[in-house]
Each structure stands twice: as structure tokens, then as C-alpha cells.
Length: 265
Image (tube, rainbow, N blue to C red; front, side, top):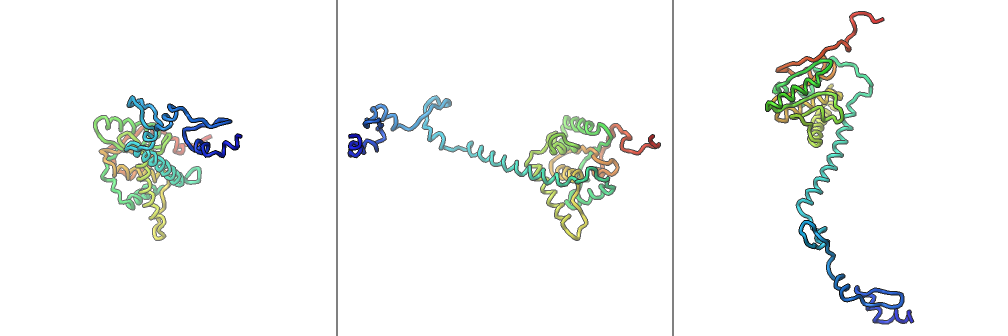
């Protein structure tokens, strides 16, 4: 009897009707109130409006804020990938040797790199700070004092604590990742072109010298009033010694890096 009822035309119509439901023995029409609720679009309460809204319209409609959110997320992913590529390229500039011999021609090499990039650092007002201990703190204090007086500052110190962007600051703040990457590749690609030229004896600068050139590139491009530059490596042969400072500072000096005047026991 059940199989016969399945083949009946009325049952076929009931099975196809959205307002029907099937039990073990027969098909019964849904109550009128239930059929009416199924025919209405799915709705949900909108706490902002205090009323019900169509859920499909709620999730299918895209406004300007949604477009901006998607674009910001895409930009963030692109920036993260570019930042990783930049850090990888920067790390390749570090020598594989644990200790690199001090280059006595570092000043001339840095000057050559600046000429290749057509950077005229004589336009900068530089405060140059040297010393064995405390020169980084001295630079930070000088920068803070000048900024409190309304000067727009550029600060170059080393080493960094967490992020390499800490070394170059504009008005107290590191550059955003995207801007740092842009400056990095402008300098990197230009110097790489000269180092790849067989007729040119120029080589890609090492890690510190590259960051020094990059700092001067940023200081000359960004609108600053004064640059505070910390001596980084080697003192006399340091790459920052190409500047003609308007003022110099010397913090505590120690003889830890100099041979003693008498033989050690």
C-alpha cells in the first residue's frame, strides 16, 4: 500500500511542494502559519537599527568601508611580504666572517657610494656624537631636546634592539615598513647596478655602511632641520666620518679597543 501511494500523482505533487513534510506513512501539508514563515525571507535583528533586516541583503551588500577593509588587508599582506624580502636582502650584506677587519678606506668608500646615488650631504646640518659608552643615549637626549624646541629631527643610531627601522628615525619615530622598504630598494638597486658593472671596481657596501648611506638618503629626502648621527664602528675609520658637523659631542672614552701601552702579564 505504501509503494502504491508513492506512485500516485498526488503524492508526487506533495513531495515537490516546499510546504510539505514526509512521515513514515504519509505526506501531510504544513500548517498555514508555517508555510507563510517559510515563504518570508530570512531576517535577523539589527541592534544598530532596532529592527529586522534581510540577512541576505545584510551580507551581500558591500559599502565603501568594506572595500577599504579588504584593500587594507591586501596592502598589509603585500607589505609583510615586501618587508620579509627587504630583511632577507639586508642580512645578505652581513659578512659571513664573525669579525670583519676594519676597513681603513670606509670613509672614501662611503663617499663614493653617496656620489653614485647623487646625494649631497653638505646640505644637512649634522650633530656628530662619538664615544665608547653613552653616545647612543647622548644622541637620543640631544634629539629629544631639539624636538621639544620645535625642530624636525633625523636620528641615526646603532645597534637596534628589535627592528632595524629603529636605527633611522624621523622626528622620533621609525619609518613605516612600506616607506623603509621603498627607500631600501632605491638605494640597493642603484648600488647593485654599479657593483655589477665590470668596468667599475665598486662593491656593495657591508651591513653598517649600507645603513649609513640609507640613513643619509632618508635624511635628504624627508624634510628635517637637523640630523643627529652616532659614530658606529671604528671611530676614526667610521663610515659616518664623511659628515661636516655643525657640532660634535664626545661621551665617555675608554681604552678597551686600544692596545695597552705596556705588555700584559
